[in-house]
Structures are given as C-alpha cells and as structure tokens.
Amino acid sequence: MQDEIINKINEKYAQLGENPDTYLNGLLQAKPITYWDYIEVDTLLSLQKPRTNFADEEIFIMYHQVTELFLKLMLHEVKQIVLAEVFTEELLKNKLVRLHRYTQMLINSFAIMKDGMDYNDYNVFRATLAPASGFQSAQFRFIEIYCTPLVNLINAAGKERLPENPSIENYFENIYWKDAGINRKTGNKTLTLRLFEQKYLEDFIALAKKLEGKTLADRFAQLTNVSTEVTDLLKEFDHLYNVVWPMTHLNTARHYLDSKNENQQATGGSEWKKYLHPQFQQRKFFPALWSTDEKSNWGTEQ
Ligand code: HEM
Image (tube, rainbow, N blue to C red; front, side, top):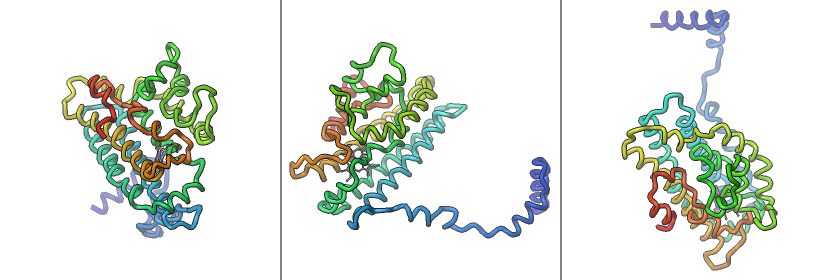
C-alpha cells in the first residue's frame, strides 16, 4: 500500500517536472495541521469590532457576520447550479434542499436579533452605524442576480418606467432595491445608496450581463418533464427567501423602530415600513411557477 502511494507521488511530481524527493522531504518537516490554523479561528474571532461600549453591539455584529457566511454558503450552491456544465433535475434537487436548509436557518435564528438584544441599548448604539445598513449586503443582491432575470426584480411601478427593449443598465436604474434610497421625482439618492452603488454596481452589472439567459430560472425553464417535487422545492425556496425571511426581518425592524408607534428613522434612511414589505417589492425568482392569485396575494399571508 505504502509503495503504491510512493509510486503515485513519484509519478505526480515527475509529470510536473519536479524532483519528488524535495516534496517528500517537505512532508517530513511540515508541522501537523491544527484545527485553529485550518479554520482560521483567531482571524475569525478578531473580526468583531464594536463602535460603542454597549455589550449587545457584539451580538449585532456577529449575527450579521453569521448571516454573511450563510449567504456565502447559499451563493456556493446557486453558482454550482447556474454554472454546471451538465444541468440535471437531480443536481437542482440536491442543491435546492441545501438552499432550503440555509434559508430556514437564517429565518429560525433571527430571534437572536429580535429578542436577543437589549431594546434600549440597540436603539442607542444603532445611531453610531448610520449610514450603514444591512441594505448594503452585496451577497443578498448577488443571490438575486444568479437566481432570476432582472425583469423579475422590478416592481409594477418600475416596469412602467422601463423603456422599450431595456438594457441591463436600464434594469438596474429601476430595480426594486433602489426605491430604498432614491427620490424618484428629484433623482436624489441617500448616502447609503450612493456608497453601495459606488462599490458594487459595476460588479452587479457585469454579473447580470454574464448570466443573461443563464440564471437559475432560465436554466430551470430549459428542463423538460420536471417532477412536481422539484417545482415545489423551487417555489418553497422563492417563498422562504422572498417572503418569509423579509417578513421575519421586517417584524424585527417593527419591534425596534415602531413598537411604540414612534416610527423611527432607519440607519439607511429608507421608508422602511413600506419598502421592506414583500408586497411592495414584488420580488419573485420564479414567477412562472405561481398562479395569478398566488402572485397577487404575494406576502399577504403574514
Ligand atoms: C435589529 C436588527 C435589524 C433591524 C432593525 C434592521 C432594519 C432594517 C431596515 C430598516 C432596513 C431598510 C433599509 C434602511 O433604511 O436601513 C433594512 C434593510 C436590510 N437589512 Fe436589516 N435590520 C436588522 C438586521 C439585519 C440583519 C441581521 C441582516 C443580515 C444581513 C439584515 C439585512 C438586511 C438586508 C439584506 C436589507 C435589505 C433588504 C431588501 O432590500 O429587501 N438586517 N434593515
């Protein structure tokens, strides 16, 4: 067995034009890998840098970081679906099951935000965060761009503003999330939106161009004789990501910003009560799978 491995190592490095002895010596000297080095524990645990002395600010930072890691896990799955050379129903099913698990995890853990922080402390330390807002989470937008053609990210009012034969840039001018920070009459944008666009808009446009006709929804439409199991999984993912998470998040915003009818301004400055509601956003990744009734009742059940 050992001879076989040594032979394979010799072959591998011979093919690379390298001397296998050098690498075997390296192996002999190398320190054993440890959990803390492999997982980068020290780096990970050094990333929480509160801006105030309120103890719960660390919870706020860490939960956002946990969410970004989960969004990265989701992007990892979505990319494998969209970029797969061979796209099959089986692949889609396996990845969708994972996507559900991650989205459920985000929904089920959101109580860490809603009930797990001191109400008064949060309402003080959050002032130091303006104009930053979860709105500026780019991974949240990348998932959308991978999942669906841009037209599905434009609400009814936005569709009326679109020119005939819209370009990718036209779509981004009218995408639902812009409504969080633009005055459509004057064109003025909040600092939150301006900074977000300066950092990411080019990347969003480049990705949308690369994925034209190849998003998850497009790839799904090319499958034939799809089982209802997979169709239901897609619908459930759409509902979890675009209705259940947004409502869980909105209820948390209501808890901190409006539970005493104080209608507080959010750090990102949006008209958040309206903007964050799935009925206003009308965001659906797979609208072709929903009936007219289901679409008009989008987000009304909670
Ligand atoms: C106390 C907890 C939270 C409150 C009160 C809150 C509040 C808000 C508000 C009011 C907005 C609207 C934009 C603005 O004007 O700032 C927003 C947007 C957003 N927040 Fe949060 N948020 C909280 C936690 C989180 C967490 C933990 C995440 C995870 C990354 C997150 C992600 C987002 C995203 C992705 C948006 C944009 C949503 C969209 O465009 O549909 N938020 N948040």
